[in-house]
Image 1 (cartoon, rainbow, N blue to C red):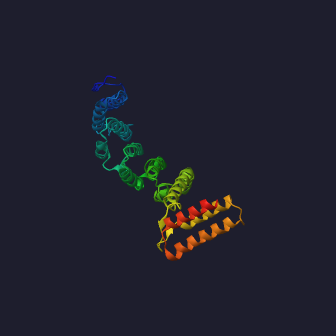
Image 2: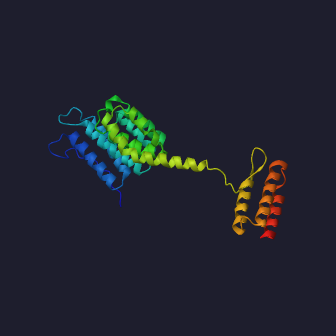
Image 3: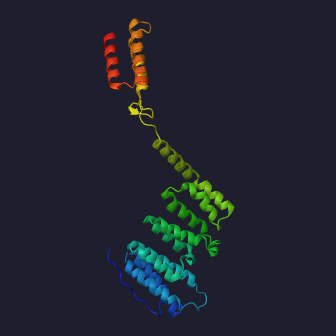
Length: 282
């Protein structure tokens, strides 16, 4: 789609507004249109021009400078994100509001989502902590929403589910009922993650395969006794329990085990001898 050119507002844009206010509204509309048509440079230019124009309108009656600043800032942040100049977002916000803790919730929300998408979780944590610990934001209606965004998009991806309750306790802008509601909301996710972590830990500590011969602390090959037990079962499946062959075979197996236990004889020789005897008997 073809890019839009930046339209410079006319001073007599709309009847009923002062020239400065009419010009400001035009900048806002131009920035919105430019973002819609993906002309991000034009959007940012209109936002910056509009923000500089706000200063001329602060003395007017029935004029909300805060609303205009917030809308222009939101558009600019979106444009920076779309054109992949995310490194300019924080300087822009700080230029407008001084500190991130004084920015409105809508602006902070965009910043958190942007850095979460970039997987820059330390930056998310820093921004969220600064804003959420500012007492001026405790009464903001969007305070719980900011907490939720940080938990869902910054803590859960890092598998910090178990730390969520402690984090909520540090958010003093939340009431007790809000904290309880959030805990219930996250309960399933937290439980599933803890269960998954427990299962992964159990798999990591699984004992080695007993069929593999290894040496224990006494130097005896590990798994020999298991081998003898399996050989005994095989013998008795093939023979009558009280036959002469079964009795002789069992005696040979016991002698082999005692030889390993006390004389430390080579396992391979005894294993071959037992197998040879068994083949002749059966």
